[in-house]
Image 1 (cartoon, rainbow, N blue to C red):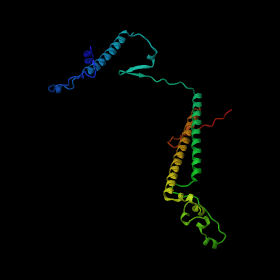
Image 2 (image 1 turned 180 degrees about the vertical axis):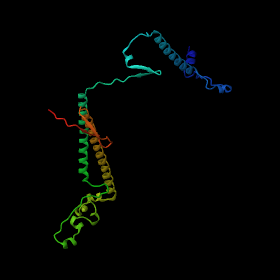
Image 3 (image 1 turned 135 degrees about the vertical axis):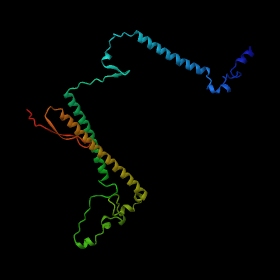
Image 4 (image 1 turned 60 degrees about the horizontal axis):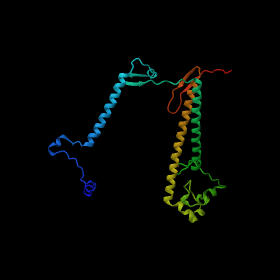
Length: 253
């Protein structure tokens, strides 16, 4: 009994190995194993069952049978084509839809305008290169004062910082040890990069706001065209502007 049990143990059993393709039969390709044959046979029988079921379904079909799908489908060159049904919408419903579209676009445009105002207030209308188009005018009492006028002394800053229109600290501020690091070249470069990024965001928001304005105008034009009044086209529609129509004056009661 013990000897039979020892022979049946997995640890002492030999691994089952299927033989590979013989050397003189290599031109025939890979030698199929039993597991490969099982997968191939299952796939074959599955396909045969599907074909058998379809063949039986075709035999049992009544050629005079009617179903509602026949009215919206047709067979063209062996391909089923589904006819797209158009939704019936009244003119009043279309006007309401146009109004909702305009309200949505105007809401988005108002959001973009708020973002533009916020960015402008943060940037103080400065250019990306640090130059401002505005001018700072100083008034003097006499010509002698004009000749002796010292801009650095008047602004209470260093002569090297006079040309700046932003981040121009006073002498008292520069004496503070905590703020000396803000004038370091690396810190100034970082501020310049941040300012340039803010200006690029501002430019994107301005362009988006302009696009929203054009879209709102085009939707309003299409809404006005739905009115049954005589109209003449004055200008064609472009990417940056809607089409312009001249409507006949109609007195409202």
